[in-house]
Image (cartoon, rainbow, N blue to C red; front, top):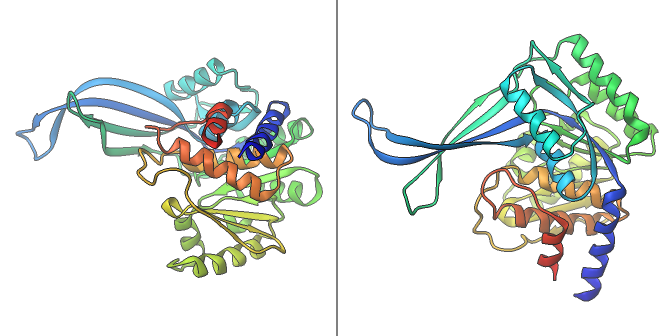
Length: 331
């Protein structure tokens, strides 16, 4: 155990020297908390007495936040609206010391927000009762797309790795995917992909981290057992010509595929009695990417990501994890 702890301490010690560009959909995760009081006379629904509101970094912004909390330097590239939510997101970035030069503020764009309403009594845990999403979900205007491409090219030499966090909301366009594929093929750069809809459009990447439902949707199949997962993983890693593929499987843990190696099935870290899975995929790709960039092999990186995800799902809301927490968990 001491040798294992020392090994991961060395990996995490390298993280502060690394700089990662995160390209993707910047989302505002809004939490509205209320106290349940009674049932409405107007309809069979609870009446909530407003208690508080908080705004957290979601989507690609959560991947950015995870890299920052793990000690890495991060350069986000994306779009927010010239609206209150966009200004709030930028304000959080500023508070956390995250660079904002790669973020485009556009008056014709509405910042994506996922509003979660949480209800509870005086001495009970708040539970999510409904989520309301306000999304653009339309192709970017040509001038915005070109500006994103320019900012990627302009800062490419300044980063050690590229992380693509694609929630399918339009920022990661086909043209930008082509650019990323070219970088992955020709540049000596780590490129990691988390894409809910466009994974099979990518090529030659260092790593991809889909979850099991995404794999099922991509291939049009149902994964019933490890053998099914193994077949699916081999098919995807060949299809996108990736160096590695890490499939997250909820309470079943993870499955790691590396070219020319046997797959590794990694059991879940910690308890399967989770508090909140929101944003766990962002934690996985952030920690996996940083570990690879720090010199870890794929299995070491996957195990580190597994521990990070196991810790973050025990926290409520969109959350992050720190090197100290990871090392304490290993110890």
